[in-house]
Image 1 (cartoon, rainbow, N blue to C red):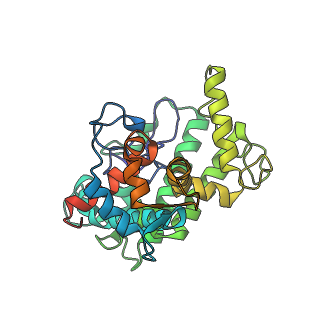
Image 2 (cartoon, helix red, strand yellow):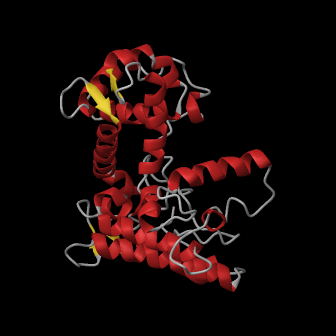
Length: 297
């Protein structure tokens, strides 16, 4: 699958590429879903989160050792896990992207759409679509150059994680946010209105419930409440903090019996069923499964 998607309808690849779980190269922050699970735990064994596993991950998140986990600690743990997953999954990326099997990734392998010729890939595209595709190629090229620390024109297994996981590099994350702003900011005022931000989602017919849901989500992203997203707020979307923060905050609010804005393991265990049926549960499950896979839990 290619780093750049030249899609028939001219839409940018927003996480549709078939990369390892947790990949956020194209703004995919929903890599947290557990294999075979629907959002919120539907279609999944209701006991997929085991008390012993939750106790272990709770202790890992609890950095200050006070027996409770706060939102800040969960976000820090989430950042650490993203980095760890990108590093440990690097050979999966290499296997998929390394066309000539030399053990490293060239710029062409990283940027070009699979084995297709660039001209063939763009055949039938409008000029606007071609421009969008070029901007996406430029983004991927920028990521590559930032990650290529030794400047040899290739990404080795130590460099590749930086190119595929923005949490590892604030420079890459900033590049992604700049790309989002550039492609969506129609009036070029340096910020995104709700309509600009959700342009691709609202392009077709939409019912009132769906529109209200997007509006509510935008308000949560708009931290300063000015009705627009600035670059810092866009970065929060791009790095996945918003998704984790929103899900965990909702769970803490419901499970926090003593209202100290933190969760003891007793509070988590008492509300385990609610966790299993929440978006937060899919995050915890991803972390647990990753750590189990690597014998760290």
